[in-house]
Image 1 (tube, rainbow, N blue to C red):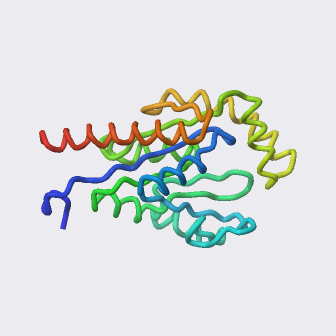
Image 2 (cartoon, rainbow, N blue to C red; image 1 turned 90 degrees about the vertical axis):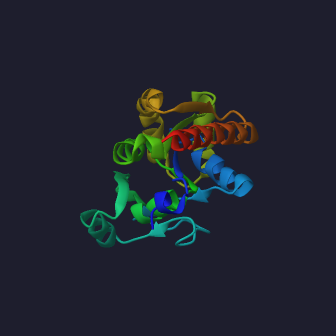
Image 3 (tube, rainbow, N blue to C red; image 1 turned 120 degrees about the horizontal axis):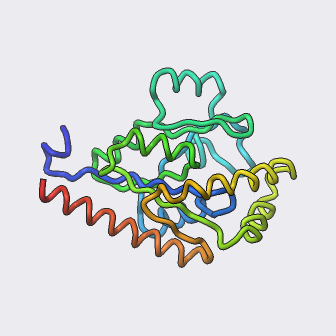
Length: 203
């Protein structure tokens, strides 16, 4: 049964992107914990890091299984970084939209562009997150201690290109302080939901 048949409004897919070190994962998880949004769990072929759990942090897959999913059209978006594949399973996002829930997608620039092409404009809202400056961005990247120097330098080099794409999003937020950024993003989502609901009411 469709939302129209039940009187339920469709949900909203909130795409949060930004260069490495912008803090999109931290902000996304705070939004989910504090405001009850649903989280889209990405799939990846990279090995789990210490403390990560399959189905909670990521859906960890072999490269063969991931590529099979791509062939079957199981991903809303997918891309490759540092020899690992990443993607957003389509079914959970579609289910959230059908059930009228807001779901958070923490994805990179390439993935966000795919989502914006594949989801109707009324079903998604893009937020581009940035660090206050290049120095702080580098400090955050190095504080992770999960990657070597070469990977850190590559991420920093890509950041300028990624920031240039920020103007294509519906809103930009500077993550100078996590709690302030989380509140600002939450308020932007509320406004987007209100606009969507108003539009549905007029249809």
